[in-house]
Amino acid sequence: MNELNRSYLNELKGEHKTVGQVLEEIKGFVAANNIQGIAGRMGLLKNGLVAHIKKEDGKMYTDLLKTAKDMNIEMVSVTVNTFSTAMKGIADRVLKFFGKYPDKDAIAKNTAEFNKDFHGVYEDIMKRVNNEEKVLYPMYEKHCC
Image 1: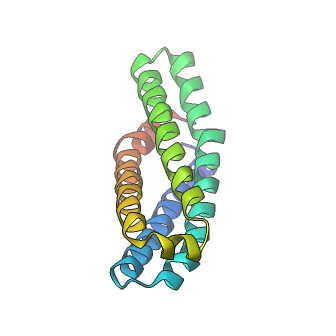
Image 2: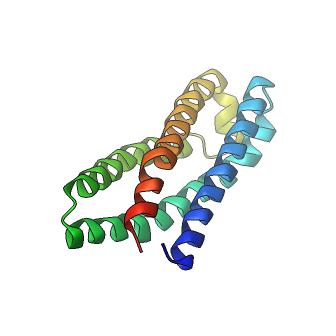
Image 3: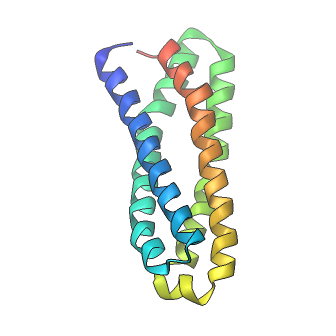
């Protein structure tokens, strides 16, 4: 793997850590019923996730699919397509969540429902991060560039 792609992969891993930290902060604010704290971190979480997804879509999936085609490695192609399809579902659910709770008033108005919805988003994102780091990122390291 060349240095540029190693740096790219390290950036993605760093973004995972940042997203995980923000999720944990929000989780703490939820437990403390701190609506202002939750609202203050929601924009950071949304912006971080959207930027991260674009960064992955713009390079990782493209590189892996090209490698799969060039080297005729069907397992890589199937894995990438599975991850890509799953990510679209997660992204849709997460964006609906952000749309449903655009500000502190919406969060305060539906606190119990927000807490439930946040738990689902938290689980979706954390599972995805773990799967990417256990499967997708090592595949990228092994087969790309």
